[in-house]
Image 1 (cartoon, rainbow, N blue to C red):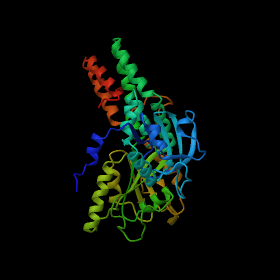
Image 2 (cartoon, rainbow, N blue to C red):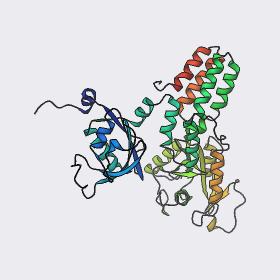
Image 3 (cartoon, rainbow, N blue to C red):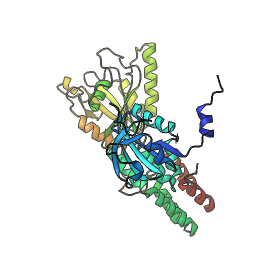
Image 4 (cartoon, rainbow, N blue to C red):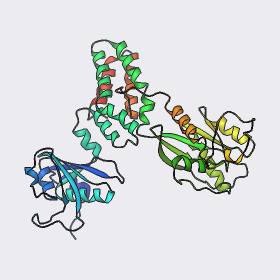
Length: 403
């Protein structure tokens, strides 16, 4: 056999004349969007796309949306084979075309693979977006928008894509250049206020349910989610690992974690589950301590309350099984996973604790960790009397080629 060439070597040696990138996030979706960009974009797509109208792609007016079939290497005069992939193509220019196909991973991989065979270099979406943007912050907001899980999160990221954060950074640079260092400090400090909030727009807030065995954590989580994510059984210690699920609370993305219940007479396997629960709780944005109203308040319940780094939300569960709420328990929300009593109040409390205030529309919000780091270092440089360094750090945030 002859010498084999690896994909990496082929990418370095092949004279690519266009690139192809998947702009929508990975996973199943209704529609996926790919971009084909470069001098041979029209030629490459024309080899694979059959317009249902019979028009030639290179003669379509710019920005015209065209329905058709993805038929690799087929006779242009033949009818599309049964089952051919249906796609929508929009030719923005001779060198940039969007292909919209079924959002399943198999369909996306098929379209991307045939484009590669037609001479298009597959590149990550982040590389393509950054390469074709003059503003790194705007480009990063575009990428973050594709991963936004809720409308409220997307609205804040859309403001950043429209330039809210970029304008703020540019304003600070202008203040520094004009010698208005106090104004630059105020601008940066005001922007950093939203850093912790902004970073949760892409990575959900973490809410962890903890408590004794059989307190009803798994049932409560299933009711909150509206589907059965956790196994439920009357036997103590059914949950052994940390189970997670992402949903929206108050319009914000939240990841709930259901943890192993704690008890003194735990087996070795249960003890490992409890240890994992403790570690998960330590990393939580909010702890929900679930207790059982059918048994007395215990030292174990109190231990979970005292474990929380911040004030937890205390839930007195199984109110459907008691006629009178015991008076010896600390203040908390009364719920039932069976009847859903108290769950709207619980969701409202969680949303209020996670996001007590929200930024006004159009405000600059740092949404990635390196944004906060760059702003923090620039602010420190200003306070140390090093405005040139502060300006350089801020310009790196805007530079598409920056770190």
